[in-house]
Length: 90
Image (tube, rainbow, N blue to C red; front, side, top):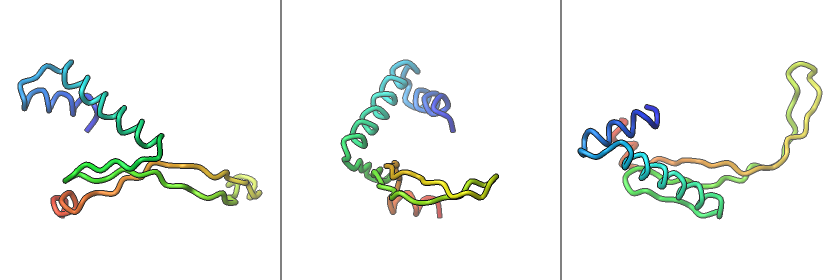
């Protein structure tokens, strides 16, 4: 499902305008992103949690030359589904 499809589905099911739904979804995504940038976890009950994972520096290999390449440490967003969501899927 794309963002546009999500907006259309929510608008149709709740008799709202697509513009209003898009504004709310954009605000929610921005709020989640801002919290992650600050290093805060975001927990959405019944859905899951977003966290920032710290990835350590490591040595990789260039697949063409097989030469070692240093990969710098970085931070990445991670998602962990809630038990409720896991149960729905299984």
